[in-house]
Length: 105
Image 1 (cartoon, helix red, strand yellow):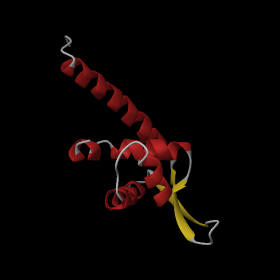
Image 2 (image 1 turned 90 degrees about the vertical axis):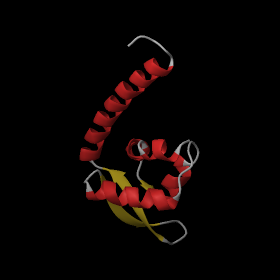
Image 3 (image 1 turned 60 degrees about the horizontal axis):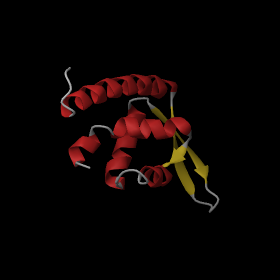
């Protein structure tokens, strides 16, 4: 997938994954890599920005291996933002689908 195209949709992807469950950074990266290539240099700054915007909360927990991990959880503000982003995405996707399938708009 084109890097610029992917960067434009990472916010909605991250919020969507975290809407289902709280996750630590590496676990989130692993989950997302099942469907798209994403590296830590992209993911962690994105997580910090979403946290700064109030869309994510963080907490620290000790893992089963005894390591301290920072977990990310979507906030109510993040859930509201995700609903809007999904509506915008569906509208945008439908418009692009119409154009590339040569349908009349």
